[in-house]
Length: 193
Image (cartoon, rainbow, N blue to C red; front, side, top):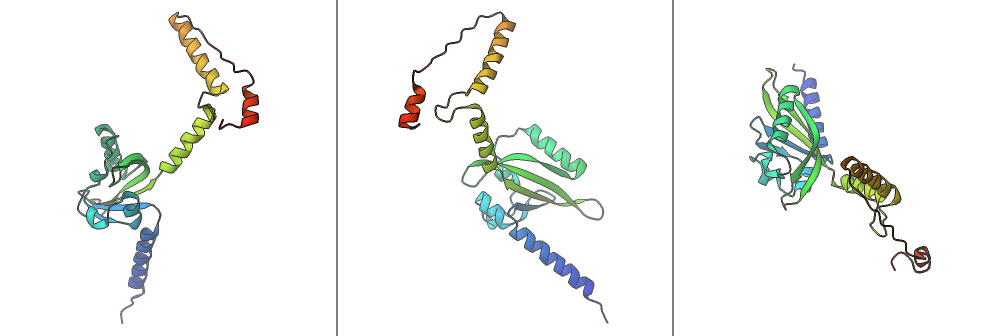
């Protein structure tokens, strides 16, 4: 008699893991030890615009945006070599040429002898979050109607310029323009007018 329960359990866990990877919203990309792509999930093809067949055998350099210098990648790989992991923000390029930000996690997979056999990269497109953050920053500092600095932002900028002028021994002039009954125009005709 042969007890197959351990084998069935292992097969079930493997099937479950594959299902999770295939259905997660995060992009999951697996490379071999030489960083050649061996597997991608559907989220990678959806986010980057490549089919799995187009990516197999290539390196992730195909996604390189040009926004990071050699020092960035040196530090990234040094972290992976030292700790087995790197996590952070990186800008990559889609197949259509669009450059976008992503939050990425890169991990080394080691065999029982400690040798790297694969790298697993998981990432999420964070362009929507960055755009929302920029919009909130804009609304916090600028008037949405005119696009001009709001009072708070103007006060901060004016204080900084006054401080710099004092430090440099320069004179400074401030011109204040007031539009009579501007509020009445807004209230009567609306912001669009």
